[in-house]
Image 1 (cartoon, rainbow, N blue to C red):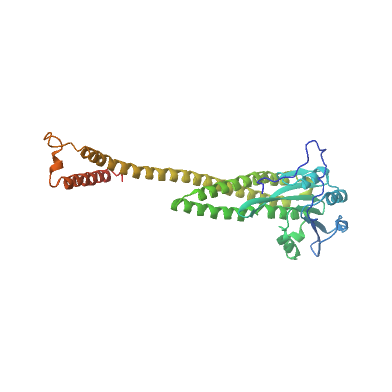
Image 2: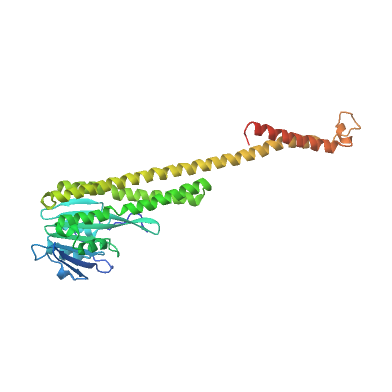
Amino acid sequence: MALFSKRYHPPGTPPGTLAPATDQAPPRIRRIDYSASQIDVKEALCLDDCTPSPNAESIRWVHLQGTPDVATLSHLGRVFGLHPLALEDVANSGQRPKFDAFDEHLFIILSLPELIDGHVRTRQISLFLAPRLVLSFCEGEQDPFEGLVRNLQLRSGKIRSLGADYLLYALMDTVIDQPFPLLEEFGMRLEQLEESLLEYPNEATLAEIHGVKRDLILLRRLLWPQREVVNRVQRDGEDLITDNTRLYLRDCYDHTVQVMDLLESYREMNAALLDIYLSSQGNRMNEVMRVLTVIATLFIPLTFIVGLYGMNFDTRVSPWNMPELGWRYGYVAVWGLMIAMVVGMLAYFRRKNWI
């Protein structure tokens, strides 16, 4: 699976061109009409049911779960008056988080990170805000907004009594808070890696460190621009964002700052783990070399003695030709000398804290 996934047009394609239909299943459509006093949830609708709300008091939320085809995007763009460039960004997933303000609506792209098989993967969330209308797109099979739907069905919830801009905030807050459990998982993985480094570092530990580093780089690439997106929404939302919702968006911006602080801390911890691994490998190599050096040093004088007495000059020719060869206990004496030298060298090494 590619680390960075993105659909795009061939170079030279006119702007606003929608991508050809894919072989994926059509998206699931959910339409929710709600007000302070009532709510109507419709699942598995067709495109003909996706129209602006005829009720001047209710708010309509249309959510598409899956990858929309050209026909779906063209119909929604025609019915809701969506800008072709915004529809192109919805079709070409893998976009950088962004915010665009058009004449009649706002367009927002966010990245939803998730862990799949221990690695970070992302899904694109596309949001449109118009008067009394929110339109949302999400890739994949799993709907990240099911909890929000349940909150809408509770009559006591605050979201029912506020406008479409508050619903937009609730969707953004759901996406922006998603990295917190992921970062908690990375924190646990970093603690386990630290324990592995202290016990016995190996190549598998190094591979895990590099895997975490790659995932954190991907998270930073996706989450860093979302902070600016939230800031621009609360600053440039014009008439579609009320002052009350801007207060909640300010809190949402604080969450993006907290996410980036945690992410940068974990990146520094991962870099420190890599330094610890390299240092431990160097220390381990130094320990091995020290042991080998001690062994080689111990055998240097022994090799000299054995080589000296291996010359075997005949003592009958000269009394200076190794008279020890004729001693009764010469062999034992040489062994005693070599053992005494080894013991003395070991004692000296211990005194110098070399071993």
